[in-house]
Length: 73
Image: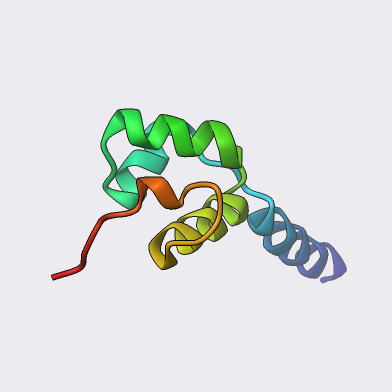
């Protein structure tokens, strides 16, 4: 039983530090390949870092703000 619990905790912790490959990132955020490559290079492959970078990009903050859409209609 303890092995099962420790396995679940390990899987949960590993999920927080999981990484995208570039193709997964492009599909997940529906980005153009060149824009995705630039963001991926600046933020790194960790999912949490990329999610934070994309959130900042959507808010128009941070180093990726220049890549944000001009308006949301």
